[in-house]
Amino acid sequence: MKLKTKILSLLLCLILLFSAVPMASAGYTGVAAWFEPSLREMQQLGLLPSSFSDFDLSKDITRAEMCELAVHSFEKITGYAIIPEQTDYFSDTTAEYIVKAYELGIVSGYPDGTFKPNAKLTRQEFFQIIENFCKASAFQPVADESYLGSFADTGKVDQWAKEAAQICVRYGYVNGKAENSGTYLDPHGNASRQEAMAMFLRAYKSLNEYYYYIRTAEVVVEDNQGSGNVETGNNTVVEDVKITGVDKHMIVNASALNIRSLWSKETDIIGTVNYGTDLTVTGICENGWVQVEYKGKTGYVNGEYVDDYEEIDNTASDDAVDIANYAMQYVGYPYVYGAESPSDGFDCSGLVYYCFGKFGYSLKRTADDQMNNNGVAVSRNNLQVGDLVFFGNGSYANHVGIYIGNNNFVHAANPSSGVRVSSMNETYYANRYLTARRILTD
Image (cartoon, rainbow, N blue to C red; front, side, top):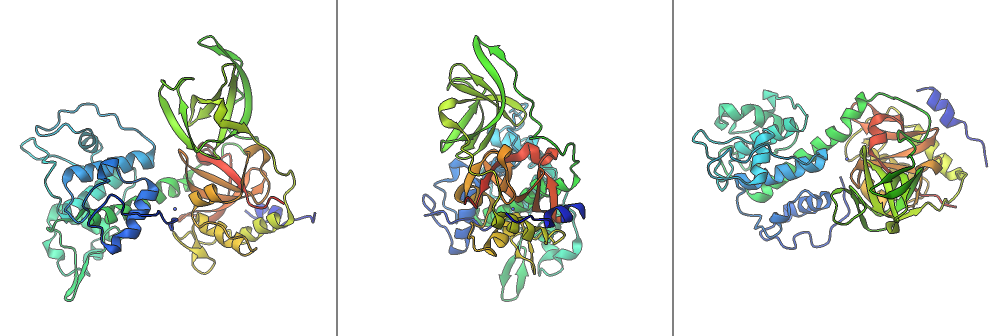
């Protein structure tokens, strides 16, 4: 194999097109043609509560429905399950998702102690909920009054809602309604379910980008050696079951696998992972279960649904190294959501899609699709130059990079730092690592 030196020298110099979901409107009625793509995307992202499945989307959204949508998405994006401190805030409802939204500061009640869950949302109330949702998720959007100048009815926005309206327009959450005489915010009009859902989807995607990407610009490299931050398991006995401590990785062979607090289907589920997920194994239980480390917690999975890796190759192919080197030339290029070319910039999966495409390899376009549809799974301990490394929350990959050796990978990181090289052992990435896939197996 040819000796490649570009990677070393460059190192020294140093999300959403989604695959179509069939029958997106199944179960829904009143779906406008313009909303179909957004509906498919929300289904792909898992943003729709199950109670929405038979909605007429042409009807106006209620305060209760917006709470359920916001809380469902908040828990998904942050990975936190909200447990309400109390349920008697309002005289007319104790619905858990409304209580959660209230405790998060996403919504408030009325002076008479009611919440009015069935009341319709005005568009400016929706603007305010979107601002509150962003702030509850640690994103602090900045208002700018100049962004309302192009709307014919700016003066109709109530004073209390002006900041929220400015934020929603500035960040692209709200586009306004185009009519012959101009573009209108229609602040006092009601929002249909699909209008509200479309605006909320834009906000969610922007927030997801912030939550998973922009914050990575502030991470600190704690270590640049070794296979990760997980310590070798210890030999122990738990409830009379002997556990042999190990330090290894295994791959999930089931379509979905629950990680439980102990070795029984009756115990609590602390997480769920999908086929191909790389699990950090800390112990082998004599009863056939496997002890794993999951998000800083100790969990257990049924040993029938995990396998040892069958390693493919120990030496990267010339093409794999060439692709990695090719990607490295774009270090410093801007991060642009949805972009996939040097002229426009790259998002994370766009960089991978573009670089592999230049060498004749046709990959899926999004990180999660690349993880689930391209290449073969390889363990972290067997990473080679050119492998794809995936990061995310739970079992959903929202970030991908190309491994370049020595526990480093090149990726389109975030709008703050663009395409750059990062360490697999940075705390942020170590905690969110899911798995790796090898595209070139020959």
